[in-house]
Length: 148
Ligand SMILES: [Zn+2]
Ligand SMILES: [Zn+2]
Image 1 (cartoon, helix red, strand yellow):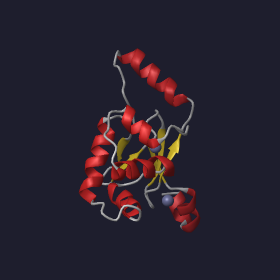
Image 2 (cartoon, protein in one colour):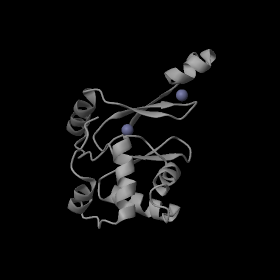
Image 3 (tube, helix red, strand yellow):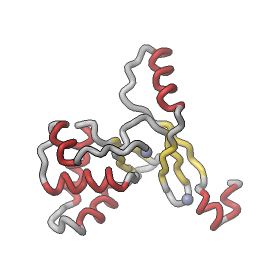
Image 4 (cartoon, protein in one colour):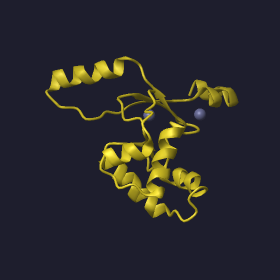
C-alpha cells in the first residue's frame, strides 16, 4: 500500500475537516498503523494519548472522515465493522477464524475498476472485493482449519 506522507493535519484541512487534537489522533492512528480497525479498537488505542476521548467522538470522527473521503468503512459479514485509511482500490483477505483483515493489492484492482466502468457505464467511486479464508497463523495453530 502506498503511504501518504502529507502531514495528517494538512490532509484533514484540505479535505475540509476542522482539525481538533482528537480528530487528528484518530486519523493518525488509522493512517500510520495501516491497519483495519473497529471503532472500539481505535478508541482503546487513541485513548492512551487522548484520555478525555469518548467512543461517541470516535464514531462522529469516523463518520466525518468517511464523508470527507479520507477513510473507508468495511464490514465482515456480521456487525463487525472496520475502518481503514487506504482508500485506493484494493482487495481484502479476511481470516474467518481470527478476523484479521489484510490488504491484497494486485495490480488487477485498478484494471478491474476500469473494466467494470467500461462494461456498465457506472462511475465507480469505491469497491470491495473480499476473500474469506484461514490465515497462515491460524492454519499453523489448527491444521484442520486449512481444509475447512
Ligand atoms: Zn487467522
Ligand atoms: Zn484494506
